[in-house]
Image (tube, rainbow, N blue to C red; front, side, top):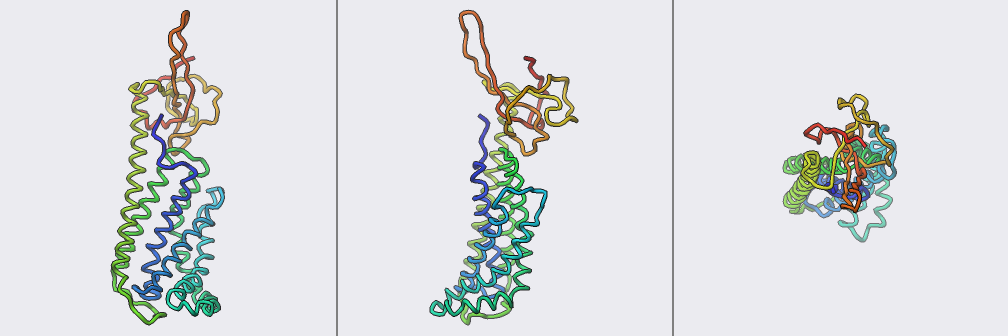
Amino acid sequence: MPPAPLVTPSALRPIVLHVVLAAGLVMGLPVLGWVIGPGTPAWLAASVATAFMVRATAALATRSTVDPSRGCAPTLGWSLVMGIANTAVAFLAASFVSLPPMVMAAIPAAGMAMIIGAPLGLTLGMSFGVLLCIPVDALMRVRQRPSDDAIDSTLLGAGLWLAAIALVCSLIGSADVRPIERLWGFQGSLSFPLQLTVTSLSIALGSLLALAATWRMAARRRWVAAVARGEIAGWQITAYRGARDESADLPDLPDLPDLPDLPDLGASSTQCDHLLYRCEDPGLGAYRHAETRWPVAWVPRAWVSEPITAVRE
């Protein structure tokens, strides 16, 4: 069998949401350090709350399989709403850590903080939403028509996206941060070691995810090329002119037979005009030699290094 994707289609969304959660924490640390002040327990609690709000934004934007042609509108819409709400959530999280006995009293103050901090919440929500459009849009497209290569491509993009955000935030976090307002009157010493640890782990995890997805994609292409060269017994690839793309420059081949809805190994269905067959030889009988084969998946023409001639049945 061709190498399977790194994860199953059902596990793709949870993994992307975990990547978004890590990115939310990476982005929240420098932003909340500017608002509250780095190194305090309140800063850490507010950053963690912000990370979960960013994840909730992506979860709401991907809660159902919608038409990808709508673009980033759902993501940006939910980002604005959650950006305003995050002002109150981060305030409550910071209050719970800094002033535990006064948490109930901080609830009305959180509503006031949400109103006063609405401009800042909208700005941060829009900024985070623009960044979220990249993994969310890729996820929604692959959910419309999942394929092995599309799943791995989405994981590759999500890993690079996380690593790039962590790298940029590490440069921002290393600068001299002067908060606009000291809501809590003590300064901790967790800022630099914690931010360095979080960003380093995020860069490492994002890069590892991207490398694993790239390796799986390359292994799948190598396997298909080997089948096309006849190096793997029990498998065969056949080309069909106009099967998916009428402009395909292929030799005169037989018409496409009636087939079930086969999966695509490539990310684009229009480029998949080669059929991958599984072949079996039942053996030699007393009077005849029977051979059977059945189609398994569509293969992109770019993965086949040599021209394939269809077998006329």
